[in-house]
View: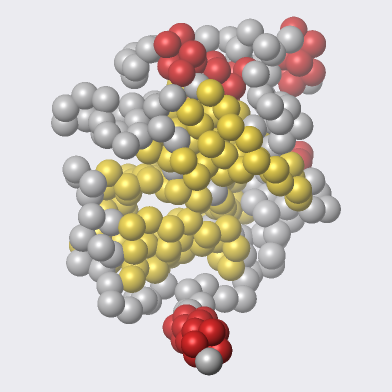
Length: 288
């Protein structure tokens, strides 16, 4: 009898939890990212994809990045980055929001894909773009502080070996504490690329990024996505996926990064170096 009562209670708990679930974004929304703020509020980000495709996949495509704030209940949808048209008439879109929150300043960082070029068609001469924006909350309203394209800052980190890349979506991993007093926590971000999943880090909350040398020994060289779930100073634990035009697969791995931190140091003034594992042939192919 006791076992039956416990089973019934468990089923009732599961049923109540299911009823309590809320669909924050439905329909033509994809690629979520969620942040919990210091005051307990939650911010959920998503692509709004009216036509369902990726950035630049079709000439008529216009994807926005939107968000909602949870404060006792979910608020109204807000458009953070709006698709538009270049001076040459070509449409541009935004997608795959990677986000981070600085509890000391209340700022929100958003890195994303941008432009009118599809990832699969990206070249060094005409690449898929990279975009950076900063926001803060005024009550339950998300206010944009600054936004700019940073494509020309990201691709040179790889010295011509990477011809297509974007920050993979989700919450950007942060160190458990700042490396220096009154400084932001270090950020670790994953980039999809034609050479596999790459890792960059930042000590100034996304203003500058440095290539993490330790990941030259990529345990998944054919992977294009790495989604962080834990990242203490000595070890990066991640779920790695290989994206294709028809689907995606995923596996798990653990990659030590302590040696990479020693090679680069902890200063944001460190200069990126050419990855030693990138061959001359790789670089030549990427420049074509």
